[in-house]
Image 1 (cartoon, rainbow, N blue to C red):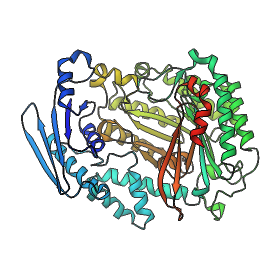
Image 2: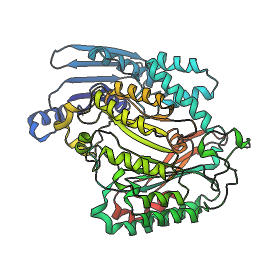
Image 3: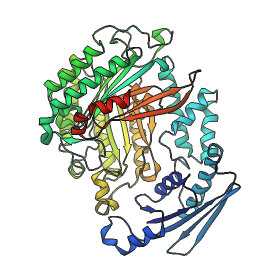
Length: 521
């Protein structure tokens, strides 16, 4: 447990994010009263109740003092930052870098991403490259300004460079993406915090849910009729939890309301020769209306059947994911995945047999009980399958996940060697002819690490790039989904991102439909 005391709350999120990066899994409280209550009632709390540190940050308009006390050794560490804390744009990184270096001194550790704690570290490189910065200067900026390691600085710059190639011909202001949420799964994974309900216990609600979902899709299609739909991403949950008849019903409705049976008019591209674009998604002979990409997360191999794959193929799905998370059967049981590694292989080969030529696979670094040898086993199995893209997630402990509730039980078994695991995945992806094309981070990742998407040339997921860099509207439909609206000034510059969220509960989504449509409008 860590006690945090500040005289203003402006930088509390930054402080907590930095503390979590160094002291993964520790509870942070912000009052003596809370710390005393926890100490008196240890049995009621499922985290370490011993007070490890006390952090005091006192802000004024000329300088800020940070004092960190170690309770076990009585040592004190201090630093001072000059400047007016109210000018957040100027002051924030000075404060964060000072705090980072102080915590680094206390722990004897450096973090690969330095003082960067945000979700989208590649935005820095994207902005610099767009403004004319060279590749090498962009890398140096990460290292000198944020104490980022060279390897991570190179990764972020490489990703941003590839993103620019993927989007440079798109008319971003007049385009949008559609996300369709299917909140059903065969079972709930230990680490999952997404809106997800077991399909077996909720099968009587599926058709009612699809009724509302199709209504929402129709409204979006009408409301956005003057913009170009460039990518559809059907996620969840597990979309292939639907049976093949239900899946066909959903995809047929999408076909009808967006006229996907027509050939593209190419108006989503900015006046450039179509032959210059990159990626299979941009294949000029196979486009459907304005759509450049159509993804379904097949996700769980135990939900994949030949009939469902045939339905997807008949509706021109261009990209699917078959996600093992690990190829170790023992870990699959622990995390609640009701399938084996062999089932992953069978589902993958079946999809290949039916003609899917853009298959992604997701894996997770830092799963309960996994070490470097187990990650090596997973990567060896994936290299034999030769997917078209590979996404590596660093395990994040989310508040709503069952893993968070069981932290006492599993804390000693997770997040070992995570950075080394990420390096192993990078090497394996390179061996498969892939390079990184998108990157993001989540809160509560051990070591403040990252998630990275690797792909072969032409097999990138455009939707992933557009949502992570917040470059177009992402209109999300379905329970638990969140829409993002990119607000621009008269010159086309992004000035803010607005959001609207749908209810998470299936019943609320069905019963409060008009309310959610009102939020979108």
